[in-house]
Length: 121
Image 1 (cartoon, rainbow, N blue to C red):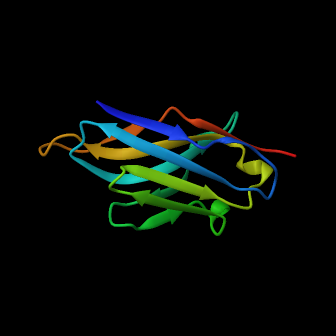
Image 2 (cartoon, rainbow, N blue to C red):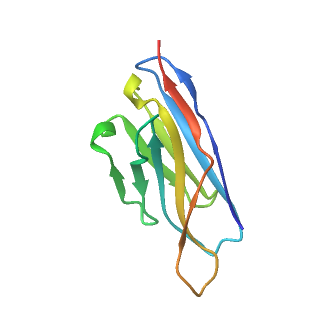
């Protein structure tokens, strides 16, 4: 089975920074797109940033210029560097990865357990 472990959330003041990490383990043939989503109370889960296996990135408009996604393929880990944090960034952040566990077959999506990010003074 595929397992995702997230870390790095917490409480930070407005203008501060946090770095989230998501490590993937288990029976893995190949990892494709890795991404971060967030869900605030009473709202839907939305894409924050994603990175393909080739390194192409995509960001939500609300985080462009403040957040940066990266990945370390050798460590099977994706990162989200969050700078200039705002109270509206407060949410539970989830990691999602597309993983193929066998040579034959389609990749499936796997989600992490979520990590709370709270931006408040």
